[in-house]
Length: 299
Length: 299
Image 1 (tube, rainbow over the protein chains, first blue to last red):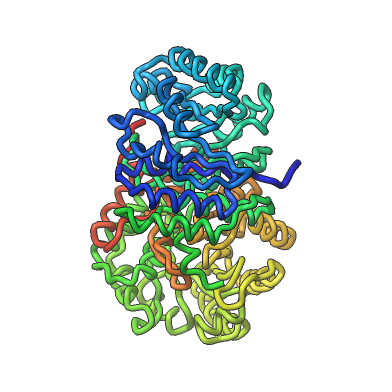
Image 2 (cartoon, rainbow over the protein chains, first blue to last red):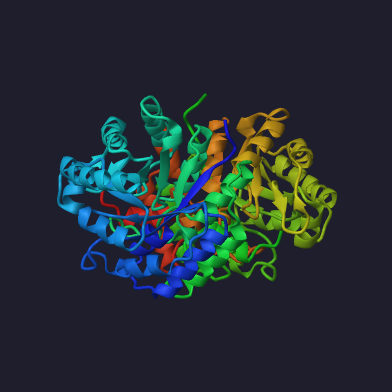
């Protein structure tokens, strides 16, 4: 099995969206460019949703307009519907992400739709995207549990994953939205999904709400998973749990993977520097433990 | 292999010692009693070192004097030498812990002795303890790395562990003092030590400085380790790295183990409550992620 692990940076979108703070566009751009310079090859920059719903992402067009693209890097944007897709295309975006959930209760509360309704909308987006040669990534949230419905069965996740692959997604990210998974649940999800899909097209997306994210990554990589989402500095809160912790921190992910002998192609020092530049604009310290320890390290 | 995991609470000693703050004795006692009520069966209460070196532990006699003992619970105190042992005995302590390291550079800087010198002192303490019917627990710190000497070989750790067992320790705790271990190093240490000692007499003691503690526990338990040290709330800093993180939090350890199907006999809710009572006297929020998430949980 390959020693190469692929890290998708989601800090500029999933991280900042949950910070509930407007960050100046040039600061976001410096953050993005710093992360790509560190070696990140896939990064989610922003979200083309209506600014009324997510004011922190209102500068999506400006981000893409001022982006200095590096060859070989995929720059993603989240789009909720065809209108968002059109905005993304006009802004020069050539890779989009679609976001649904494994829980009916969650899609209803979060996007006011059933899962099937969200997939219908995505079908229209995906059709346009494929005609335009735009890559489409899928997200399934609430993979382990839903803040409204509780535990979610991996079989329910598999159904939604299948629909996203049927729409032509090149990979599907499996989100532990409320960060409750432990290695036991990770084993079950990988077991069930691994029987239906190639592991190399599935991405593990952990939140550290309950402090289990690094352990879940360690378990996942041992099971053969090679793709992970993470957020520099551990940016992002969780709207469904009062907690200071967001996505698994890119620094923590890299520290673990490098010590386990995997090649990520990403430099921790430069990720720490990029996150540090952003942190000056936040109202709290970054939650990443490696970030803190790295700055004060003695050996 | 047994599903029972044994948790030793070290917050009142290892945790508070590194908080650099004097906590009132009644607050410490409420913390201790709360943790024992939660189901903790082994707890390190304090340290009989000279108050000049560790002012936060100057109330060691008062702690033992006012302790309400619960049958079946072992109440430990750290003793650095025969003088400390005598104080502990006079205070009514019947279980002591001895603390050395796997790194010569560390013992020299930390306690101004060679490892051999520290073991000579311990031999005198252990002799007295056995004559008195007092249980003796051993600690080896810097098991994975030393802040002064860098990487430590597991074979060097095994030598010190052997000496502590030769002195009659009923178990030896293996400390990742600066919290740098990852599951890869854990596998190596357990592999090397497991060939020489029964796993059931070895205790894993992780610090979360680099955010790896929970992953290391998950790896350890998978390898057959069944004894862990932890600190309620994740109390304690690290004097060798500027970091807010201390021992692995008891709450995080329990959450992980319970989800993995292990029986700990300890109630998370009561641990959270005990840590909460103490947290009001600290200058910072508790680092435990489960602690934070537990209070804001929705499912």
